[in-house]
Image (cartoon, rainbow, N blue to C red; front, side, top):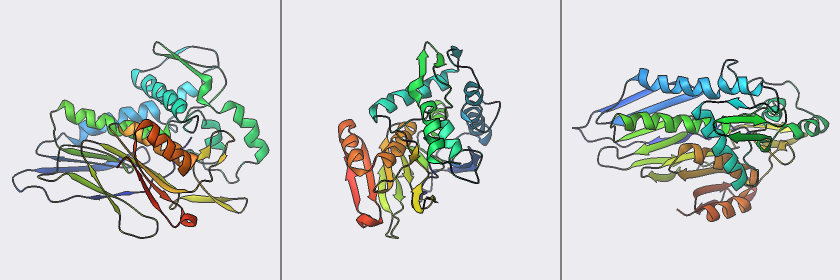
Length: 314
């Protein structure tokens, strides 16, 4: 399942105390932008980009030399040794696939490409017959994992775009913690994690509202947040407007009552995956999932429901 272009999370950053130095490093990665803000101490741009380059080399869907791209070319029923990072993310993906009853499914790479949600854009959307043909080759349930190795039992293509940016955020955060940086914010494409404070204040962010109301204020206390939504980026198919997220059970664009979902968690990659799954499943199932897993979630319903805001476990 492809992570749609994320609703930008506007960073509301208060001024830090005068006696503390602040470092802000920005750049590009994974087809989007990144920002690393540290207070008091930090790391170099080269250290950050070394981490991000490794994430790209592992998870990129467009780099023909990336580990994931090469895995997708491997034949079925053959055990393949993979890196610890790729194995970890695939293992977490399978667990979230189970927890979300299949609504998070990064085994849908072939369908993602067919719809033009991947690297290569398509001039014409697939027919329902083409979707039905690809559906049996589009689920992570056909991937087996064991002792650092993986095996495809069907010729699926894996696309980890709905979790890799979050993993990248967590990797940069790990870099900062290894260098004893206590106060920081890391953001990639709207996925954010924070630690410590910004001077004397907590880190505060705002979730954009589609009706133009002021952003919903969120205070992050050593937490991550990821947001997925459909009101900035969408497409029209068969005369109906859809988001760039697929329903794994039928391979068709998701059509739910949600405009956006924001999930808070200790790990950005986990928040990233759940936000995508909840957008695909709609508000009723999303609320049930949040309550069952004790997730902190902010749901914004779509225009037909007056952009109602629902907070679970705030």
